[in-house]
Length: 282
Image 1 (cartoon, one colour):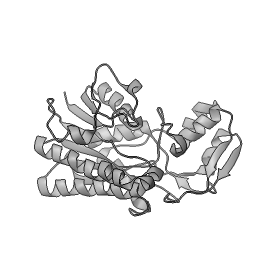
Image 2 (cartoon, helix red, strand yellow):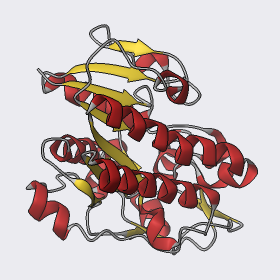
Image 3 (tube, helix red, strand yellow):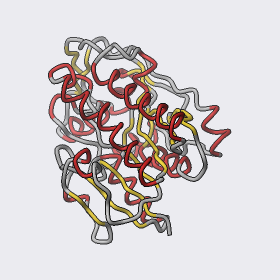
Image 4 (cartoon, helix red, strand yellow):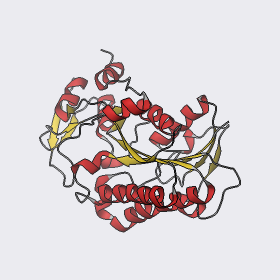
């Protein structure tokens, strides 16, 4: 039986990953400070440590870990403008702490990177610090031989979509606004395009990444198809209104997943139109 450590395992992607790993017969340990995760996602058959992962991983856990899935992060663009130092400590330094733990304890790492890299690492503090995390992974892989695979997520949606105020991801915002009969609020002109990727496809790919030997190989986790925000809104079929544009956000994301498919034998199975149709009953 493999043992996995999931940082941020009470969050949106992390809790879905924990459920998937348990189905795959992993023993799972979770570290989450609950700053954005939820206790309601906890499982009775999983060990939880409710604390800052950076503090916990400066010492060794009692449980021998085979692979670390590192998802804990300040994961939102706009709040990163407000507190860049915290974002650097959490995303950049925090990833180095995870890498050091893996070096000491001979663990594999699957690192949750971000497609924000493609829009420019200096576009906002979030993008910069997620790139910092990638660079820490590359250094530990090159210098110390740590087995690391880097996943770049593209606009994840699905069950447990987080509702986190005005910076909630757009699919979750539209879901909530649809439940309340609208209108759907669109930032800017709505012609921004995103490669929306279902969380179930993301977590399946991450588990596949954990199986082999990698030296900071990068895998795009998207669908290879994108939709404008206006097109997404039209899928819900209710009224819309536009709000002012925000700084620091990419105009378009679109994943090249050819390497991911060929190296992992992975194929995304879920589509955004099907997901929305299942919500609105079409």
